[in-house]
Length: 640
Image 1 (tube, rainbow, N blue to C red):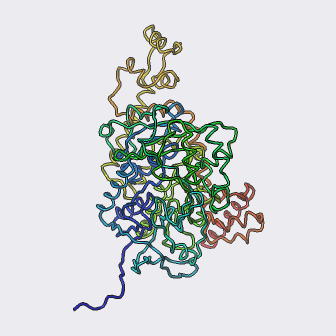
Image 2 (cartoon, rainbow, N blue to C red):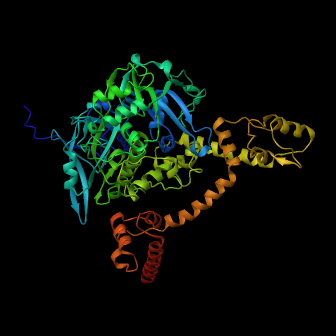
């Protein structure tokens, strides 16, 4: 006869709380590095849920997905498996801002990611609400020791990664109607915030929103502009064979709001939770509701509205550009003023969602909490917005949780080597008062941080961490060699200034040569490129498309690239000057009071990071530099 059971108690290496885009990447990273990992979710059916827009990538966000893939993450592979339309954005501009964007089949995206998680060795998926973190006090720091679920089960572990998204004490608002749920009506997590506050973690309230979903059968597409995908589809993942994803694509549609739409919104602003003062949280500046657009951009007589399919097996259409928290009757009235939506039927109302998140300045660049050893954090819980930003943080948090357990060096990406580095540095260094969104303008070295070269920048780091296979790494080395060899060949291959050459140049609108020129010099001309020069390049080898792309960019933009590399060199010098974490800023009397307060609050790890803190001036950095040099000199003398 079995004895009485008192409680469930299990031991694992890592607990990941939340299975959204951040949680999936964190859990997979830890498990793939050989650590026994359990990922908790309020609903197994909501793994990698896309509660808002049905796409992955976009301006700057495509860079993040490519970087996640280069480091060994899953998002790029999953969207390659489940996209229904793909498009390269900003192709009329320079390569620094080219960004891939793919419409996803939402249900299939979730289904395929769930399949990956459920079949990953060392990873267990658990449907349960984590309501408490377990910890002990170690000297002046806390140390996380496990988690406790609502049903009382205890999971002892060596690291916890919080990827709670928009679920903590979430509530959804549609006019006067308030439901205390997470996105898509899923269960909110109401207990964990109290546990976090007990640990001394500072929480804040943010807000985001989503537009309505329409029954596609009620839409008149003849009044809209059809938006097609690219003829040649480019994959997100560097591991995906481009030929394997060339397939028929579905269309999206473009329409516009009008003055009648705006009039209805203005007349009902008093019924909007945002303007009625019901919403407490701060919303995203760069993804405003339609109410905000109408109020803040009163001079605009129309706004773009994108009608996007939610998947192949549903009639639901996403109304991009018209997120709202207005009451249902107002929503229906305003949507029906938009050309093509005159007879629309709403399947799901638009709503705003409020949730608890943290001020990310409590984190190190590793995404570990400064005051709690073993506790890491990623995604919207860190005060960011977007699936791609979440996946990037989740991957880094998961990697560094694993590195801490395995007693290896953490992975810290800086601003000069990745968009992920820019994202995390902005989050942990700046006091973000609204949900953070990645943009190309935030990256100072964006010509170097192109989405096309993410593998060349980061694949080696993914290999060193242990998430990139030997085969993929060797493939990278071959690619690097092919690029280098072809650039050298083009620079040394000289063509003459004979009549045949002059005729060729004239036929392509290019000026005549006065003397011989290298093929590389000709490629630098705006009207010429690698492919156009094929007829006069008799020694040309057969190269993969991605190699040719890199060769052409490196040659055409060589001067600009070299200039940014020199800027990066100066930046690196500041980043290499590390600041000891035991430094007493109060003892540095020459520091201004504001700088002293900010430095104590943020506790930067380098002079570079300190220089980016608001309120710390260049003069303060000079004072700090002198202090550190004197301190290092004193420590050296003591050792001698």
